[in-house]
Image 1 (cartoon, rainbow, N blue to C red):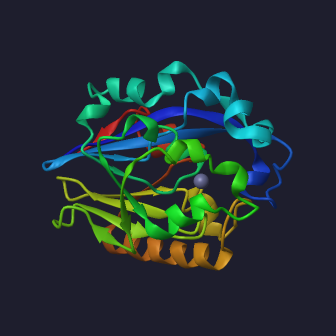
Image 2: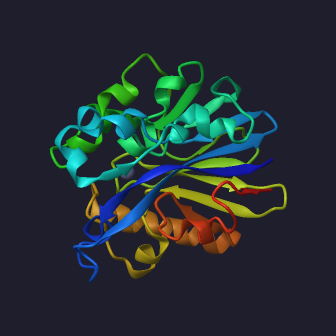
Length: 257
Ligand SMILES: [Zn+2]
């Protein structure tokens, strides 16, 4: 079983998004996007899908006025088919998709995944379809409203029943956010946090980001994550980790076994 972390573009985002009280507010940082592939013996699983390629060509048409807040840095190589090609796969090779949540920088590749079941928290799908005013600009209905094969989850789920791939309900950033716990062949555990926190360091400080649904739910999720981290001596990977080249240890496309 391999875990591939695939870097798929990013944007330049103000530090205020990561932490409105950080002293770097007013300056921008490169905010990477990632998708992940896990080659489980029973199927290839994709965790998140990156951003839609239109964000590279006409971000305003895709995201509306919110596009001005992000200096999107997206090339054709960041589209899902190009990302999967880097590891010798095509979208048809993906057997199952797990969505952390449906914000535009995670759900933009779903258009190419109509053949596969898509695991999402029930609360996330309803939240994305009727987002509150403070998140409506970062959900793009075109990403996820086109006849996808949803499999709605209510809480934690052991995907293949063998404990190797488990979704972990981690609401806070959005109402139905979930993370993915991967147990590799070596016995090593990796927790793919997606946006349960933007930066692991900010989770340690209990410093809340600007984009969130519930601060209380987010802090409770952090406590769950850290309890499991201790239990499994897990490696934590957040999608938008700024020092991602270090956090994924090797090149962004490094895999772990
Ligand atoms: Zn998000």
